[in-house]
Length: 295
Image 1 (cartoon, rainbow, N blue to C red):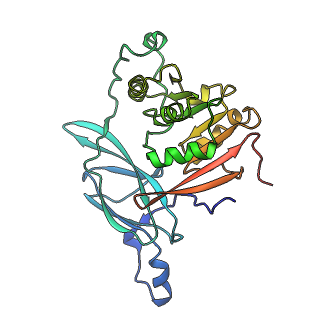
Image 2 (cartoon, rainbow, N blue to C red):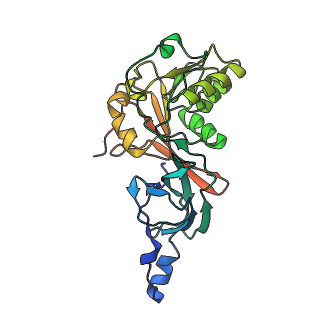
Image 3 (tube, rainbow, N blue to C red):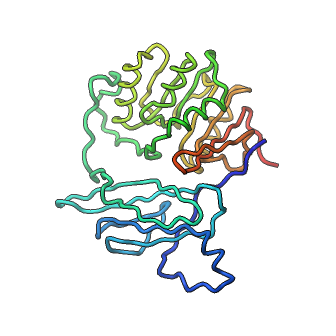
């Protein structure tokens, strides 16, 4: 039986508009999450892609009433100036009903805007070293680590065997494909577009001695042929999950799709479970091919 799920996201509004609540509203207010963000004073901040208007080094936000017992998350992105250069940073923050805390984002390391990409290291494939006049494809999603406990649950839900071929779209440092191959001795393919993550993942695969089982490809996951896959792992966004439907619908019958935190709109999961990591709840969803659209 599928567990109750949370959409995992909510819209934030400025705490400056919060009015004094009467008795009937106090219970509702207790279900809100409040965040006080420390940022560079000149930072331009977006929440889930929406621009905010607050300025200064301390900014305050609160959520609509949230369902107790569930974990919600949202993505902060901001640009700021330092030493005459402009940087962009990002962080995903998890909250629950009743949270009231400060998040210091001043220590988050940003990436210089407009900086030239470093040339690939020697461990990249020859095809990836060829100079190209084409602009580097935009990364579809920033890398956010999946906790090991969640990785294990994802593999468990998929019921991995040695005969499976596991694909991880947006594999980051390769932890999911490495765990799949290391624990179940199956073939696994990780796909990522970020040079740094590709190098990191390949180094970890080599360090684990799994080169015969794990392949890391530098590629946009929208260009990946998923026909060889029997299991597809996702930790993207709801929008990207939907955009992947044309590829996911080509999977062989019986293939499994597992997504961390995000569902596929219009396609109910066969099963879902919640994993608690340091007080934060992570949702894990399972589908089986062929995908069945909600009636």
